[in-house]
Amino acid sequence: MRLFFATLTAAIVVGVPGGLLSASAGQSSPGSPTYDINAEWRLRYESRESTDFCAVNHKDPQDELSRVRLNLSLKPADNTRVFARLQHSYRRNRLNGSCGSQEKSGFQQAYLDYRQDNLSLRVGRQELGYGDYRLLILSNWDNIGYTWDAVRLGIKGSIWQADILYGRPGMFPTSTTHPLLYGIYATITPSTRWQSDVYLLRKEVIASGVQQRITAVGARPVVQLGKRIKLSAEAVLQNGTVGDKDLRAWGYWARIEYALPGVKNTKLLIQRDFASGGNPDGSNLHTFDQFFGTTFAICGRMGLQGWRNMSAWRIGIAGAPSSRLQYTADIHLNRLADARDYWYSGGGIPVKGADGKPLRDATGSAGTEVGTEINFTVNYALSSNLQVSAGYARFLPGRFVRETNSGFADATEWFYLQTTRKF
Image (cartoon, rainbow, N blue to C red):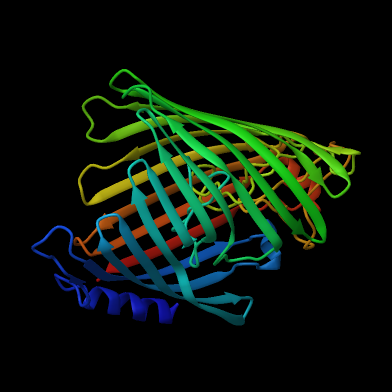
């Protein structure tokens, strides 16, 4: 905690106008090379209480995180760009009197862009993210981030564009064995009021010694209904194999956003989420697979609910009263889609209880009521180069947690404070 606030103070002190590191080369002739160098330093403190929903166990971890990024961009010609991002991330964790740390450094991104007419090509370590990032994560929140060693070919038409992609994980917080992702993701925009993404993605990976080969076909329409109402939705069908079992799964979500009249940049939203589940001991599997995606923010801030075996509602408000200030407030009502399956976290793995084992009732008699999360976040720009954000969340476990966690169902809380300084 002392380390965090010491570095937090340092970040604010050095937040002088103009920054300490900023370089660019503007040329008089349009075709001559240009370059840009900039940096970012982010600090975050996180605290959780009762992560196993059992207060007497005192599983109350605290994290101090630091991430420094140096971005270098070179444009040798109008249709060619080279980008590289060097990153150093550090995490210090405290739990029950013990302390540990993790560090990771290297090229978080390094790629070449080339464009010619309606074609574009990106080769190298890069970010891949589409839609709401539920199947392909593009997370700035994670201290390390997610990048791919990939090839992406883009094709653009009059009302559509498509990416053909093939890649393997580059810099990931976690690792799996021989992961592979390929497919096509397209966006069709018939009018200014609506557009739709359509995609076909294939995942091949070995996880816990089990070979997974899964194909996902989906669509994600976004429609503007008048001046104040926006409707977004997504539906996905999956099939494939996990080990020697066949997988047939499905998922969907829908969200309505309503811009409040007379209140500047403020909207109410209602969101419905569903992802199929099933008996993992059965001859066939029906648990939806979230590929390499995330549900952070859209299904809760605490990372407790993934897009797997879920049936949930979200009610929220988001606003930006000024260019400096943004805030959110949400309530998430979470249930399982199938009472015989696990409760899966935002990372797609089963949530564990007081005894360190995944929470599940194979008979389904514990029901489907997982619990309710309430969260708030606020972000404020002290200057164009310095931002401060904070958030709080509280999760109230339901019957399923109590009956699968030896009777323990204590509330868990989460808090964070973060600064981001750009140079």
